[in-house]
Length: 443
Image 1 (cartoon, rainbow, N blue to C red):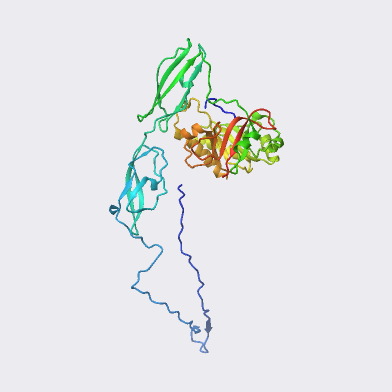
Image 2: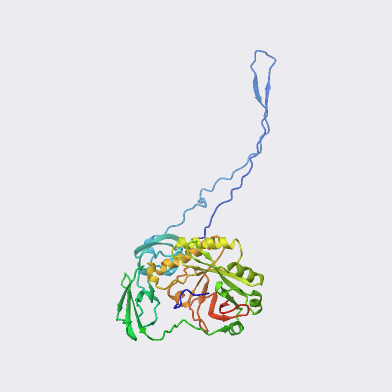
């Protein structure tokens, strides 16, 4: 996958209780009426009801008044909330995913709604209702807690900077930062840079959010020096060597492609040991998306060669509505086609992220909207991103599969990964030039 950046519910179980009501037909005795006229012409017509044998009487047992009647709507015993002692967290970080069973750490009663999530979407004091059980009796216990923001902003991109003499310099064009809550964190810079003279100029950056949290970052601006890109690696890896190095534990090996790979001989790719291909479907935002010009050729070629197939979409959406529109476009394009992998959400527009006026939670909600819309049509989603952004930025609050990009010999990504993109400089028969190599972890 070509990178846009060179520098980097709880399930509410509905339990329906009901009683089956058995309908029985009542036995009905036929009643025959007969009108008879007497010989006496002065007599009025009389209706005579013919007597029939009465059915045997059914004896209904009398209620035992000494026993209380049991019904499905019998009220449960209620406990006195004042007798329930609860130890719980006083403060919770904003947007933190906290279940009530983790919020309550000590109690003399049993918590019944422990899988519910605490509301942490707004700062300030809140109240939550705990459903408790004490000695077989139930009660609702209300407790208060405070949502706070104690997390400083994060630097998404911001390494030493290299300029030529005379270059225009604007620090905001070279760094990227964001806050978990504040959409407009402020930047203060200490130090000066003279781009008219060669030299190394140290800068101290202070990034503050509205709640008093600060990030301090040190970097150098090198004028007239040689640029060093810590993310650039031009060493190539042969697909055969790649498989041998990372084999074991039921792993499979594959590639991801887009128009940058051009025409591909998928039979040769398969013969080389490749087992799956994840292809770019397109790129863009808000459903006004552009299809990758090689998408259909890649899909048909990989499928015909017997390879497992998946798709990713390079999204630039910054709103939930836009992400839903993009997901709908993907579903329409697939037209019912089944995939072997979840659909990957690839968002890489992190350069100068501060220009969007978004916080970290906002963009994570864009992904959640994308995934939710796909799931409505029976597809799954997975999140593609670098190790850096997965650990510093994305919330992935529903723990969907992760496709991590980490170009090292062994990934140290702290979370669980489904696919690991090992490098972007792979070589495989059937493709002229570089291609991304991926490990699928099946254990």
